[in-house]
Image 1 (cartoon, rainbow, N blue to C red):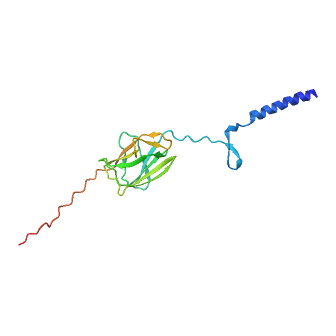
Image 2 (image 1 turned 120 degrees about the horizontal axis):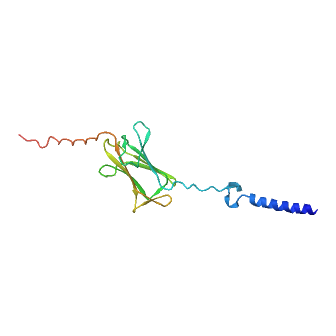
Image 3 (image 1 turned 90 degrees about the horizontal axis):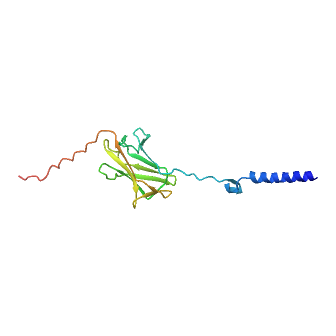
Length: 185
């Protein structure tokens, strides 16, 4: 009987130790819908910094990327549709397409925003002119900086590119109107 008590006590201690060490960590459990518990998911840390991509609709109907980090201006086919994407949402920003004279181009823009990024579409009434350079600018709407969806400052983006082809010559001015004053006889 003494042997039974010793082995029973030892078994009870061993079982208790196994249960305590074998139990999952209670802090790693979170209630899930319906009272069922499941492991807590580590929030997705996402990208550390905002990354931009720029693409255009090519004449064949597909889309092509415009490299943003080149020292030389990339050559792009004539297009009237550009699409800027970011890997994080943005706050207090503006997007403009500038011509060679640093004037903002007239366009019909639309944007889809979310914390995990934005899609900014620029539609121009006419295709960009061959031989000319353009710059896509993303900077702050007000103040000196704009932020990502996590509240971190983002550097301004200036992405220049050139449309393939020879420069279009400007149209000559219309001839002066004839028929001024008639002489009376």
